[in-house]
Length: 427
Image (cartoon, rainbow, N blue to C red; front, side, top):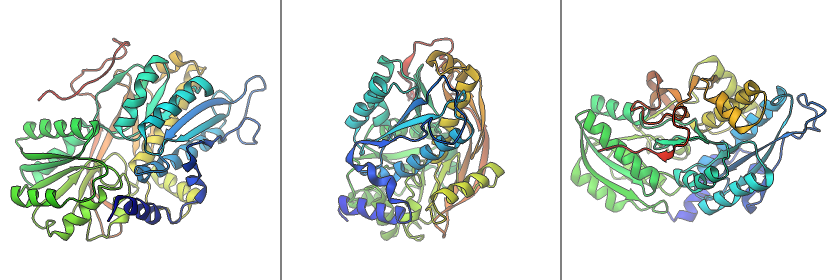
């Protein structure tokens, strides 16, 4: 299947029952604003207007399989915060942009939110490439920024807060589970950009730590959908497990071709990315059978906060919404952490809000209670290992509680607030 055809199919299958309004951002213009102070919901002080906040995500293009649910989570979070009075009695006014799966547009729209909108906070970015494209300008303008997605870890930056799970929580858990339950030999397939390259190093790091062997690594450009040569390599190398760090609409073809080649009975796929784009919804159950993943959040979690959140989500977006992903949980958590910090600080002033965030806030998220680590600007997460099932969802098979984000202790932004770097594994 050609890439363009695949993207159309993905959008049609995943989003058939979703409101058309969420795709009107394809023009590349601002998606619009919500939460105006003049609106009825929430309370607003008479001497202060709404608080400007910004979002940049991919509503169109090859990465919209991740972006649509994150856009929905953004709008849902803003509305819920405003219904409860906003922050400091002021409503939030969201300006949102569709970056159209293009890093240049991320930079353009982030600059617009900083320089024209004067956003108190910006949340956005899906791939690590988009985050790193924006970060120099974020640092230059001393802009408070939240990155709400799982990633390769290591960002240590005074102005950046990351709510997604990182390798010391996710890959460490997944690799150990693989060694204990599948086998000691692994072949890695990774998206060919910074996420895939750094994460593949983390896979090697944790394989070495757990007595595993890496049989090979291939980096796959995001627009590649033909995996014939890769399947031949896998048949020759015969790993116990394939570590899939694949990303985007085109890469979903790998799972279908892997199943068609009869490899499911010969080796197992483990992945820290499968499911974030609702691949398990698009694929037939026999095509995704036996894939093992690890995330803080699954829609199937039985805690009361999540059960209410999913029910409210489906009331808002429709009972046939395909699946609420870990990315939605991370976005929801990011907005609520920021709102809690503003209320604690008593101001939207950047430095005072950062100080409040660094003070050790916790939040009852859909995944469970999470705590913000002030030193690293990352979260402590529960991590669940799960496998695909026959109903286009996941069965949780193991849970590890309260895993910290920075076991090497490399990042301490309280002691060293001028750090603006990214740590990578030492092999």
